[in-house]
Image (tube, rainbow, N blue to C red; front, side):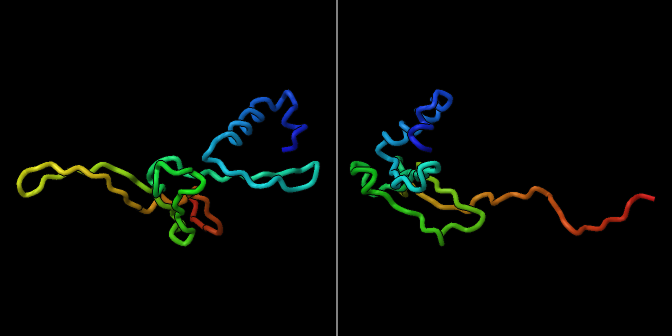
Length: 122
């Protein structure tokens, strides 16, 4: 959206949202592209949590892990980080943080069907 459109009073909420995006350290912006009347800018969101971070103390833009596209099936994936607790043979409690990846719920089905013939009631 061009700067003139962002300054339009009708777009105040949207303008504030874009300003917050540009001000966050975990959001990386792409250069503005397009003509004067149709400008586009992309935003990439880096993870803030520790699930996809190698070093939580490092800068967000330089320290992040990626989930490669070929690792994500059509059904999607769900990444989980959970606390695990167990007891060893001597009865001592052990607590650790585990990470797991499971298949998502899928795209869903709308129930839309084509080329279906069914017999009506007589």
